[in-house]
Image (cartoon, rainbow, N blue to C red):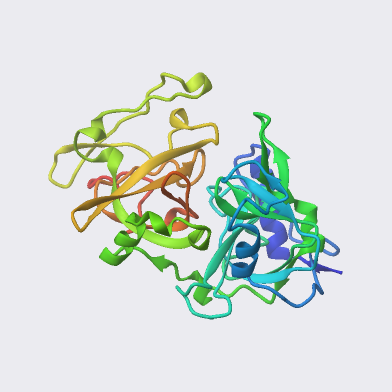
Amino acid sequence: MYKIMDKKDFIAIICCLVAALGFSGCYNDFDDADTEGYKVTATGLPEPNTTIYDVKARFCASNTTATTNLNASNFWSLVEEDLVFEGTVVANDVSGNLYQTVLLRDFGADGTAGSATDQCLQLGIKNTCLYPYFHLGQRVRVNLKGLYVGCYSKAPKVGTPYYTSAGNNRLGPMLFDALRTHVELIGDPNPQAPELTPIDLTDAAGKKWIADNANQSWKNCPLFATVEGRMKEVQGAAARNPEAGTEDSWAGVYEDIIAYTNAAGETEYSKIYAPECLRDAGYCVDRTIVSEAAGKTISVTLRTGTGNDISFLVMPHDSRRYTGMMSYYSGWQIVLRDVDDIYPQLDATLGTTGPR
């Protein structure tokens, strides 16, 4: 048996499909859309018998016991027993910035936010329009039997192995059809779910935690967190110094510098978060959030996909809070869910005071 979508979610899916085909708009003029029988996720999965914490401890803590062990950053195992856990959706692809990913969070046996058992896990799903199914605050049950669990570039993940365009074997997303047998939506989304309150890393203690490399472990990756700082690329002279692309046809192409008049009538300069010319092989642009604590500079990479709602926002010069999915590779990085994850919020246009 499978869960049946309601009309609102079905319309949202059609909108995503139309957008993916390159059309410029989506119209709700199909008043009597027939959603009867449109089946997406399973019902009646077994009751949970494990937690996200225990799953990560078993499959993500070390590559030495993985059935496929490429290196310390990329490894995974096929789950051959009924291991069932639950988590709450705290991040989805509503803006297009998170790609084929839903982030689940569960407080675990301790039941307390910020405790050792407060854990997040990526659910990789091969679909570019997941948010109509996985609303923020939606409780989700997952049966891992027949799926793979491990790490993709050090980040714990549930999915299926695949080969990249470069021929590399990696842990990628599960097929969308796998939702029918492995994933169940429990109840209705709860916008006030306590899991939706991010871990606050904006104060001095939080910045000290970021700076401590000992915290870069499977227990803290991924995190649903908030960090604070200024964008390094638009501080001082850097705001007028464009960077050049290095990938494919963008090699040697410089990003645009944006000039605007501030409240004092002076000309200032900035850049957007993710210009196409600066994308890497993953179609993302890395910028740097910097702040200070105890006399040290704290840096977190802000990783943003090109061509989504966040990409074209103009970076502010002042300090902002950034909320999203936080993980580490060579250092900490954060991926935002939506434009509202920048606070104070930015406007898509420039006013008389510049980025707002």
